[in-house]
Length: 484
Image 1 (cartoon, rainbow, N blue to C red):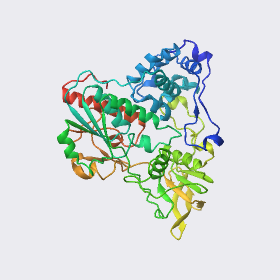
Image 2: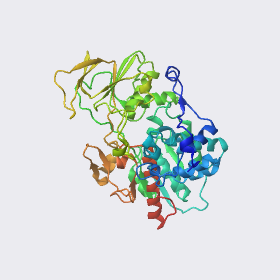
Image 3: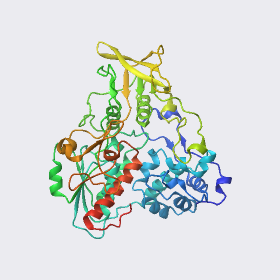
Image 4: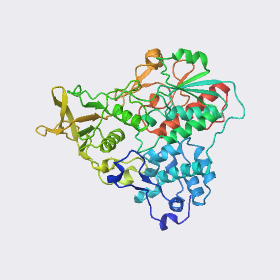
């Protein structure tokens, strides 16, 4: 905890943003960092609440010891704060920027709508640690002689790789793209997290003995079988990349796209990479001077909104089939769990028109080109209300309604039924492996992250990568000192 009476004396303060009129002119991060004294004051608000719901099980998936490092920040011990934070989270500079912060929802002070600014403090600890030179390679003192291959360098693969390398294993990460990060790099826009943070971690991990192999598409360029022969264990962290099929008429019109190719293209432009990519369309998708419709109400849809504004869109409309949520939740009914309430992302605040309780019926067009999106209002059971149809003008439409599982090509194409794919009630296909030992039904193959649990948060991917690393280390060595 921080200062005993801090929560009574100090008001909650959030980091400020650049004005929308300024930030839509670039793709850089636009959060204005707090000063060190301001961060320390916010850490001082952490109270002696008895049971800190913020770090589990309803709060932080990686079980960050939030009251402990709040107290360390309050007392100015930044080095011990990052050591404590790293004991549960390999990449706090990632989660401090892009996590939706379920920890703040679970904070006891959220009962008064004034939770501790945990996410801001977490980012400040990581940024301060880099500034002070506390984050350096920590190679293992002794080597085990065991070798592990990891398929995919997203947050799950990166977390597992770092943990296993520190346990003394030889770790090889195989990445389809030209750089590490997975959708952390190519799916999340730079205005939410600039990619130099990933590069710094890759440099640290390389110093710890992790070997990255780029441009290697496992199941296409190399077989999974060759990895199984070469390594003592293989961890599959391929992510959840197959877009959920909207099944809407008119989806073939020019101008209708799944969200991810659009975001990947722009991230490649910002990173000065060629927009051509394995598995993604290569024709340029640009929103400048156009009317944009985004179908979906989640984070990916919001990222499309912000990207479109930065490309110069004339108007952006976001469609959400869910009813407009209340401004405030009933605390006693839902706390400390994540509440359904009205939330406005920074991208939506840049001028998006949000339509709630609206279903997308079809895409309409002329001569094979999109001209509009036909919609209607729906009732509480999401059934169309007769006579409420309307058409929104659209030059581009992005479908952002989630993902249905890993790509069916590559690893899954090679192993097929051997991985015992599970289909959940929403039709998502995920690799079967439990969250205790993360083993698949294929010998020497483990699975973790979105490929196992389905699309989820970066912080959940980090947790799964860490836990899978522990499971693999234990399986290979008979025991493990890695935290679970």
